[in-house]
Length: 153
Length: 393
Image (cartoon, rainbow over all chains, first blue to last red; front, side, top):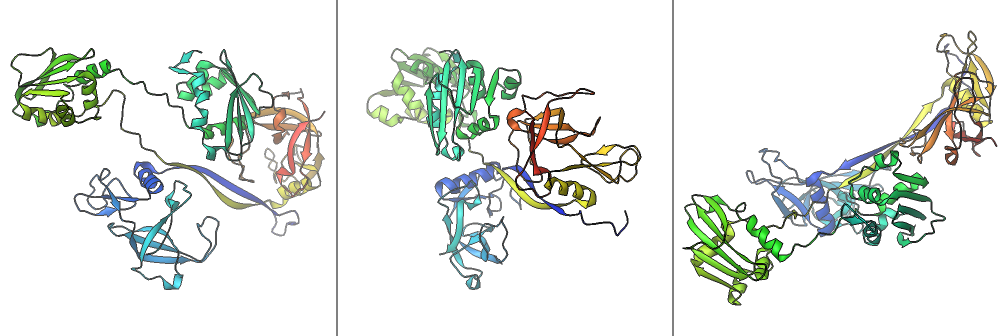
């Protein structure tokens, strides 16, 4: 077709691609979530060889490759911010309206941090080392958002 | 009232209120009928996250009526009968809105038949029947003993466990020269083994007695692993499965040829383009005639009415890439020979959902049911400017 073809009939049609999918949390992930949901407790797993506590829980120690799936430990509902970022753009998949804080939070007895929403503090005032506590969701959804957010202690 | 797989049809309906999940009934406002051959008719009414089940001969106004026999109905609910097989073989029939019925699946927790409690006699027999299996040789090293059990009462009996050389043999009756003899009444022994009462309380209440080596008696809890009743497993873990849909906005560029066709739909016109060499019509149009490989430059308005040729009844829908919606099933995916077209120059679209079982297909020179398009009120230059075709009557 010549480059200068008649474009008067060209336009775009809006579409929407939907991708239905099924997510399985796994045995470890399921117990992690149901314990948060039903008992408002956060569980990790501890490696008996290196004594590291992993959260979210996993079947195998990342360092020793030991099978640690049975070795659940209950963690205190208290931790600290090890890093954070401020989300300043809006998109429909985001859990909050911007600006909001996404923080890496290491619970006191855990050795690995988890990412969650930090509320109750201005973004400018967040410091690494800030002590925080989880606030559990009143309406649960079988997701990590059964912890609604963390806020300063 | 027959039992199928140990469960009555009544059991399934009577437990519906207990199994109801209000969150699964969100937005449902309908009645569902069940006609179970030889058992009766039930009406399930769901509204405002509440439900009512009643046994009634009147199933009028139900959005669906499920007709089946007791065995199939119970079997599907217990997972013993394959629902798709029952459906395709006609043992399980659904009249009405199949999509609506599918929603009832989310409204109820699975039916779990109640467990039958064993009788004390059965417990006692099972406890001694499994004693050899529950023996822990690692914890009985060097033991050379015989333990007598004298269980009184009508459900009781006498047994001897002989432990020797890391092995345990259980025999009926009491052996001579027992190292230790335990005495209790059958109901107390069952309670003890089920962990409902502890040995010390029984002993201090005079309901049990130990004769002989008392130290050995205290070690029995470790020499034998605890008794678990048959069929009882550790509580099953709840596994989390989330069903989600990612939705991605997208744009399709029409190009000049498809663009002309889609624009014409706004004016309620269906335009085909024609090959200048073979005269073949293309619908929807494409830039080049596929067999002749020449540019198809001619345009011809066809239809809008025509005859149904072939229809697929779709029971399993995938999401529509234009709307992101998954169509309600079953729906008819049809090929219409519009007026002015011939041979294979058919046009794809949808058939009005309540008419899919009323139309006639055709092949070759024959013609199927006469159809007309139903136009959308607000047309934007999109294939859905035609909502669907319906019978022209």
